[in-house]
Image 1 (cartoon, protein in one colour):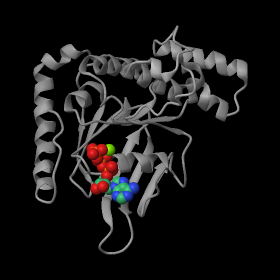
Image 2: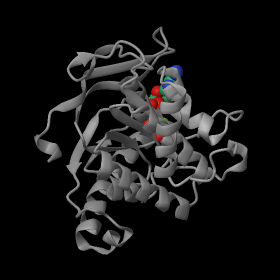
Image 3: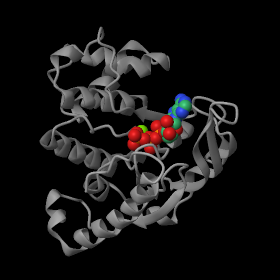
Image 4: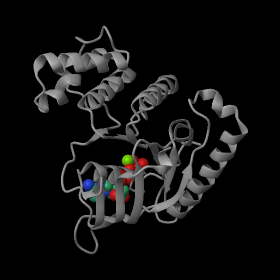
Length: 272
Ligand SMILES: Nc1ncnc2c1ncn2[C@@H]1O[C@H](COP(=O)(O)OP(=O)(O)OP(=O)(O)O)[C@@H](O)[C@H]1O
Ligand SMILES: [Mg+2]
């Protein structure tokens, strides 16, 4: 089980401050420590502005900590980390490349030859159910399809860790549910370590092995809750008393932070 495994990612007393000078600086994260265990699916929840994206960018090596350390397999991350693949909220596809071109892009960057690229690319296009759309351009696809291309592109690059920043926030409820099922299926098959940011408590409950609730800014860990809801999960799990109880527990934790946040600035409430 995930709990017994070794950490693949660790934040050790991480502080991240943006801007210099007394007046102009923002402490986004303060003294945050957390571990992500190999193979697990962790959801990060917290009020808007609490530092979730910042933490993910630190895990990806896009940002470096002001103090403390971020470790991948025990070694400090010192720059952009190719072993961590990031999926952003916006689809971030190349509009001038086809589905196939987008999916194969990371492989091309890795120097994978044409034939191998084609074969691997097709495997992931099939996996995200875009077979037949290989030669379409992003503009010809729906939002859900574009996000599936993004997912295929990241999976094809085969990172050790998937970092996902509210990847389904822009999708309608039904497409979002389909995408959640897709991600669960892929995770069950690959057991790829995943850190997933969401504003939706329901999404966190459906997807995660563990839920990490962050405090209001400056972000720290408020609580870590194991999610023992039975797997494989289906939306019907939402009808169980265990689901309702865990949801209430998470909601109370998030709500108390919203109140803390409200005292200093406007907060955007996560959807219950
Ligand atoms: N590049 C930057 N320069 C200055 N301040 C920044 C920068 N990036 C983030 N911040 C600040 O750091 C804090 C945390 O931002 P972050 O984007 O990590 O929050 P978040 O939890 O992802 O919020 P949301 O849920 O709205 O996406 C915010 O106050 C934000 O304004
Ligand atoms: Mg964010």
